[in-house]
Length: 170
Image (cartoon, helix red, strand yellow):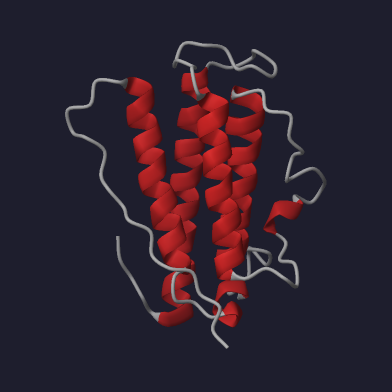
């Protein structure tokens, strides 16, 4: 049985954007959609495969679970001050681990649910604001950090998808 997720619409951010935070979040949304689309059509076996010997815990499904944890911590909790449990407490980082009930569809649903929490947590903040949890970062820094982290992991997903079924793409 194939447990797939469906494709998510991607849209490039406006090239003449003037709102810095909106631009960063639009790039993040483009990368989020790209990550989700890398899971679309994979079987569970393909999604949980760990074909990279130097990274024995890295699967396509694990990458998206990790990205959910990244957004939870940095955007919802640190930047937005949300009172939520961290999804990556522990060593080694458990956000990469696949549970027996995880499927591409369930992991994508959890990732998308986090996007809604992030939108709520960031509402009313500007790039120059300090984060609500510790005030050690600006919102600009945190959102930029999550954009770079997501972009890096989308590159991993590119490789994992090509190894899974040969599909390549942007």
